[in-house]
Image (spheres, rainbow, N blue to C red):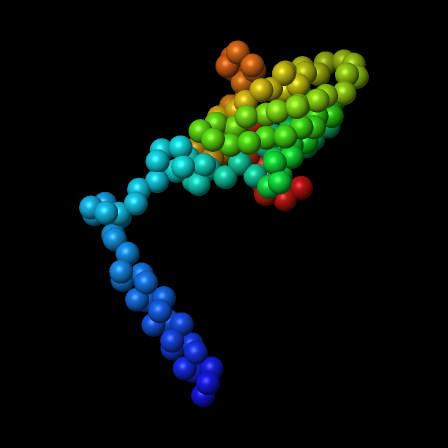
Length: 138
């Protein structure tokens, strides 16, 4: 009986709070800014690219760490998000692998397109390449 009253009280409170809020689009309703919307709608956490041998990939962790490979060299550093993704302290091993393009090792930032594609840019904002979203788990 006590559980019934607690559940009823919790549901009443939840419905009451929901009813008091402004409907989106009405005066007084809080609207997210464009940059907040892009970060909310396009969560970058997960892996991008292909983890097949010789292929570039990045994995962005929730704690702000980034790991990956340019297809030959290992990459590690940190990332943050505002309107775009920013990569900091991105370090790379410097092995030579014949036939591997090391473009990903020059990454400084990235833009997400439709939450499915990461456009990777260098420090000058020049496009280096793209990585497709691969998933949330390793």
